[in-house]
Image (cartoon, one colour):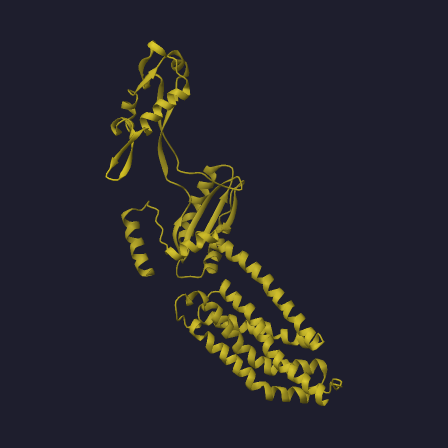
Length: 402
């Protein structure tokens, strides 16, 4: 698909260099519109003078086009639109009894037309508008001969428009954009073949190399801004997840030592998740970040299975910590391994990209698989070692009295 898009892009660019084209997938376009970020890359330029904004956009556009992975760059400068300005001679209009609004209404009726009822074509009504012929509407010389009816009562007479107004051909911009009541133009582009984060890194280096003139402010928007905002929200969720899990374990173990030891494994498992994402060339996006949050619960589950059995033996038989945790690791090895393998094989179809829509959840599956694969042996070896080092080999719990 991307090869076809590249071929069509080259053909259109060669045939019509000034034509602004966009390639989009319908589903992604709808999702992006709902998310409020129509394009992956969006550079917003704010300032009071539109000419300054457009000059800066034209200056940085050539360097941005050299960024690998940046496609269909639009510099935000709209093509000029031809306009015909009419300057009314108010004294002449008042001499024949016309106000400026009446002259404007007459000209508008001739150029845009007025509704004159409708006719029926089969079972459908067709509206009818009456206006001057195109040969008059698009010719400034013939437009001056347009008759304007002036006066009142029996003294009404026809006056050519050229005696009431003069015309000037000019150009204007097709549209003016504002955001938060500030003048703005937006440079947009798509991303192809590279991760959004790496492309935006190159874009930021280009912006740093071209300092913005005084009075001009540059802001990054698009999907990149939405992604950064989502990452900040997910960091908060990750922190809340860790605090919630720690609170549950504190209640269960009636101690802060065991929860802290179990949670120390989480950063190491994140290393495994990030390493697998790097090896498979998968970007760290919102989906993979959700996998890291999911890892917190899965890692804690293995630690609870191990340490709960340890405390059970220490409380029931009075065994010291080293002996109890050795037995717990031997007895609970199979349940921990079985639950881990079931999770890994359950996520394998998503990790391989099988099934409709699996490419969106593939980063989540890879993050969980990489984290679990590394955290399981660490839970079985590092957690007992850390706990014995903190508590001591001979640490015992009071025996449970019924």
